[in-house]
Image 1: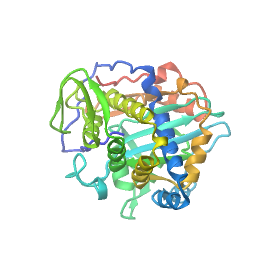
Image 2: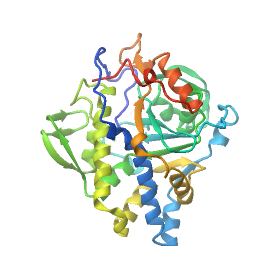
Image 3: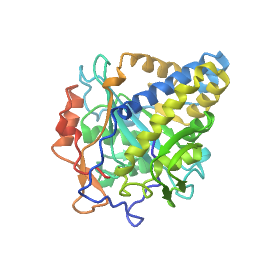
Length: 364
């Protein structure tokens, strides 16, 4: 969940020097997103089992969006062998409980993390495809947040779509750029991420060099630190204090934290502490928005159980192949033919070519 303030147009640039390639993250880090989703479902199930009144309380927290009503019939065809495709969004809204969390002076809301989780037919393996937030895309015609018609526009930043038109339009944008129908979407905001970290008493991480980032507020010396919720937000949003300063370059840092977070959850045996489990589930469900097909504890649990056969050893996370835009080197565009090859494999439930897993713009 990356929650960095977005800059557009006249605001600060995010130049990512060309020619640098990030080291490929360890294989265990590519298993993260599947366990994030399944871990959330397990926590929700454990809390829901403590009593019907608790179940109703948590169930009522989840916000749902009717994608069929919002998007109509202008969507990719659902192929019989397409498996399941879930769009996971991490939003940085500054409203409500999110106000003041890592940049509360920034207006509006954006989706700073977006990935497509593809679960092939049979659900024995899965792949998570991250879409860089600075990718220039064609936004389809949508309904704006104020209810007005929002015409289609070319060369807009991917994460601006959420700010202007909300999650349904993000789903429509992803479907248009990929040709892949999204079966579901899940969104979690700042407050849910911070609340989870604080509820488990912080997460230990080890950094190999000092990190001083005045933009995010993170100030860490080399060594091991237990980060609280606020520091965790700073950590996953840091880019100026590490690597080449690019948005692409901080992906490894985010993966490192997520691995540490999941390790801490497993270590604490949350299912043995109903009080702590309920507190975490309450925080998460209040920060959770899904499509109407998942907008209840029961539906989330059913989806989670359907993924039990997925082998984490075969799970990997890759980035949509992108290259630096020729008109604006601070932005990226989908690299061809790699991007088309990737989406074709997802659309047909085929094997993803190795060439489609490599991105010309890799950050550093």
